[in-house]
Amino acid sequence: MSDTFTTIAYAAGAGATGFAFAMALTKPGQRSDRVLFFGILLIALLAHMLGQLLILSEAYLFAPHLVGVDLSIKMALGPAVYFYTRALISSEKPGFGGLDWTALIGPALIILVSLPFAGLSAAEKLALVDPATRNPDHFRIAVFTCTASLFIFLGFTAFYLGAALRLQMRHRRKMMEEFANIERKSLDWLRTILFVFAGAWVFYTIKQALWLTGSSIPALNMGLALTESLSIAAFAYLGLHQPDLRSDQASRAGSQTRRPILTDERLGRTAAKLVRALNTNKLYADNTLSLRKLSDMTGVTKNHISETLSQHLGANFFDFVNSHRAAEAKRLLAETDLTILEVGLEVGFNSRSTFNAAFKKHVGSNPSLYRRTAGAARPLDPENPVKPVATLSE
Image 1 (tube, helix red, strand yellow):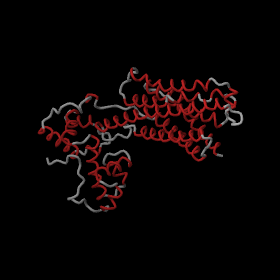
Image 2 (cartoon, rainbow, N blue to C red; image 1 turned 180 degrees about the vertical axis):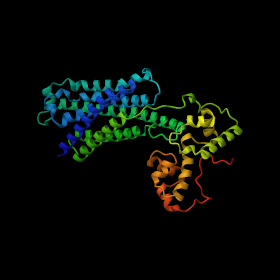
Image 3 (cartoon, rainbow, N blue to C red; image 1 turned 45 degrees about the vertical axis):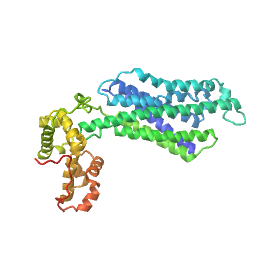
Image 4 (cartoon, one colour; image 1 turned 135 degrees about the horizontal axis):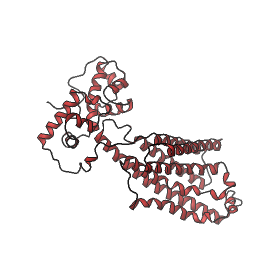
């Protein structure tokens, strides 16, 4: 029963991955480097699932030399994740060279440690299945190959996963400097998938370690197969539907390290102008508000806005706008009968989840709890308002 469920799960995941690969190749209007690394990543994931199916279905009895072939292909997982992330967040195609070639070290090491096992004949490999027929020397070769490959895979993949996560977090911080809503720009879905992948591979390591000792936990095998298949299917779907990421502030490169160019007095006047524009015209309610749009509306350059926010107000653009949204949301929650989602949309958020997160950050509780505490018809307490970033006397 366990093997049947696991086989079905991996087969479904393999089918979804193959379909996503075909879709990625035929989808128009995509940048070639993003398609390339997305495709390599899907191929590596597909190789992993087919390798599991080879063992579960006992197809290795007919093709014993295919056992272990997936190991070297799976080594492309980590580098492909990193290069795919880099391609997504880069406005132009990044060059490939220098240290990028170290991505070939992992597959090369796997091929090297697999050579002794690859040199065994088909009959010798099949004999390893049954303890009564296996050759002790050959079995030691198989155990060495499996163990060494596992440690190389984990170390190599963890390095590139960590590098990809650092890229995503740096990109997210940049988006928070440019946009008030970042859901489709921050690649948070990719970060979540990477954490799921990392967790799944830890359990995969446990599964392989148990196999080396001749034991197995059916529940672990089924749970791992289901988790891997669902996360791979989710990655394929979200990757296919990830829109191009556009930056509004290419001209700000290195601005965080340059010395301030505005005086404190000028920073104060600029801050007052920004707050006045946000409140008087309710610009915060625009769910497409960006640094560029605020610059166009106020006549203040993007560099000056960014410097005012960071040097004078101690906030990024994302928190600056969302603090004002939270202030208005607090009033609406206390004075109106609008639903939580309606309040969030009214003040400029795109979803209830992002509204909840921002509201809790700036108010200290989630919208539902605040409404229950304040009462739907009770006016705001003038001594306890939400304090937006830089509420200034004008």
